[in-house]
View 1 (spheres, rainbow, N blue to C red):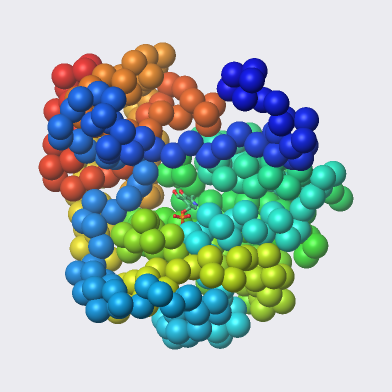
View 2: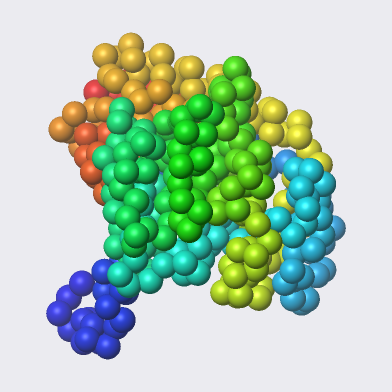
Length: 372
Ligand SMILES: Cc1ncc(COP(=O)(O)O)c(C=O)c1O
């Protein structure tokens, strides 16, 4: 930022001056503008390469004349549908403008300056950002094998700890913790520390853990009232642009979260789309199958080149390239392939690639062959 554009910096709240904003994947149109490429495969934001369910598209078209109405601020119908889908009570679920909104609202409800928020090294970027936004201290706990070291996270709890964020699987590493590890952790967290279990990639992980060892958060939040489980329609359901996620937890905490949320943060189209998406499990099944195939294909191709990957339980693969990762990223952009550099995660030697459809995967593998 230039000096002249910092004339208001002294007026800005101290917490805001410390925020390092979230860095999204490069948009397709931007790449076309900047790199003059005509065919682009965006494999940078872990979106669903199948798009979304046709049933959802039809429902939205039929709802197109409702734009002049405010949405249901309470999200009643979707919450009722989710409650039925998950066999829980409606009071145990709240909605958010993407799960991102909910992750951040938890920090606003429970933490402030002087408090500590624990997350893992290589943990999802929104956790330290949420701490920064509320002026809390972000406590990063070293990872093991790029994944959460849950016992070390327990050991990092102090009287100042308010929140622990854990992602299962984690983004950007795709790592997973199993039921036994999770139970040993959650049963030892003091009741006055809020645990946020981020299950953005739940569907992929359950599919990948065929032995049933994935600890589904919905089975735990009743036993542990300090546990909140966040989920999203952005990934396996393919609704990223609509911004719709939800959180499971005890009614009291969800009500505090609702106090801070803007009344209409979840728009009516997102609510209709999510409700309809829940009626089309075949779409999710197909998405998981496409992901399995693409994951195997990309992993085999990358390993055949002698590159290492972090085994992933989600819809992306993180690849170690060495010191020239940024150069490879840039060369891939010139080939029309957008992946995600991870220097902001302290993983400068890695690139993360979202699993795409057949075309995208071939485009990536062809481009990689060329640039290597
Ligand atoms: C681990 C994790 N949590 C949460 C999110 C936020 O998703 P959304 O706000 O689209 O629900 C993402 C998005 O990439 C993610 O990777």
